[in-house]
Length: 92
Image 1: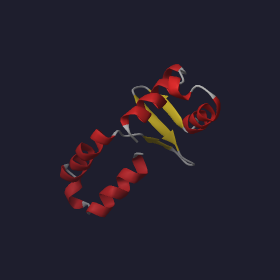
Image 2: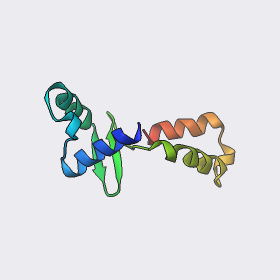
Image 3: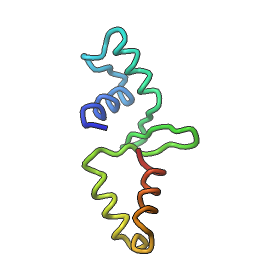
């Protein structure tokens, strides 16, 4: 998810403010349909899946997260595939 899209969704979910470039017609309807899957909880944006909520990451958060999971105390015991699986389960 790019930064502009992330900010627009956050602004709508928190404050219910539709972006000016998406406030009419089909763009508005499409934007509102997309935003139905998201929730704001405390300080983070979450996306609802069929079974649970997963945290939405911005692009700049992905590399540090992967590094932390791999270099952490238990990360060395997991394979790279397992770490990616954990990220896919917990984050969007």
